[in-house]
Length: 116
Image (cartoon, rainbow, N blue to C red):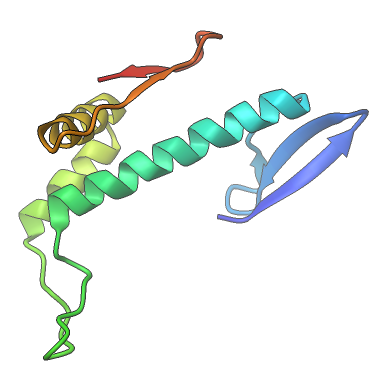
């Protein structure tokens, strides 16, 4: 996704070249960094969820140089979860917890709260 930045009177707005519209209202620099954190955090959760659901799809086997296939049901499950962020977070946090990784992120301003 292409992002452009508009700065007016020390306020920042992010423009999307994909939707051809602003993604944010005018934000202070701190608010902008909060926005970027949550956007990137959600992208990270999405990527990890995709790995959990479709691995080893997309990887190339070293000896044969062939890409590993993926079952349609795996891809369908991933795209279903993309439309339900809560279920995606549940899946990722549960699998991470089973591997001994615990995540706790609190937004003290009340915008986001993800604790698993």
